[in-house]
Image (cartoon, rainbow, N blue to C red; front, side, top):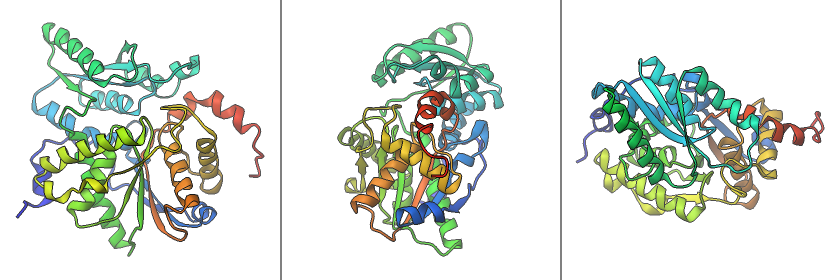
Length: 350
């Protein structure tokens, strides 16, 4: 008999950083345009530093950091990473110096990309920025961060490293096990049952956390992961690995079925952080139907994937669908030139 879920999660140190529960909002105009009943889990409203899913994901790593009496936080990710932006803010809230390693994942970027959006906020929070020239080698990025941590330790600091590669325990995914519990409680209150959940899948922490959380709570709702960084095959392998680790961490390995992992990469091209017409359409449609802002890297691609799923019949017409809005809104401004030139050709009356 497994221990209660709350007790299993309670074994891990946690620091409360965000606003929860986040709203569960109906999106009737956008849903009608797509031919479904659409609801939005508003994790763009988690509060800290313009919010997003990374707020939930950081509560457990930073809980561990505080339990170790760390005074310096190190993290690595892309130049326009939401993760490092929220980490920089959380570090300030906890009185920690923050070192951010920015990886070159997106080719041919302009000056706006390097100075606006999340980068501007990183600097505003006073994070110390470091450059990493490779964009697709997580073990190497982690190793470089470990070297930096060692040099800081030699100076008398007490560093804590948030690694990126799935070789490390997925503490951040615990935040989305709790989010799954939160979603189900809100759904019960509103007398709702969802036919499908759609979320971005990149690091796999959100995707795996939701999947394990739903299954641990007895819900078989399909979770469709829309790929934002790598192809469906390699992403599915990553999600299976992280999900297996997470299920073991909360002592529920029997709750996880590898066949539950579903990843889709049909709106990924030309790659991470790069726009395509399907993403532009999704961003414009959400804004003009609901006043809902989506970002070009994560939620825009995820909504594009949802739209394609409905049009192709993967998600049936009339289904009740939950879209996980993971935030990332500062990145809109870093893509202003690319979005603005496209929007100038779109009639304002829709």
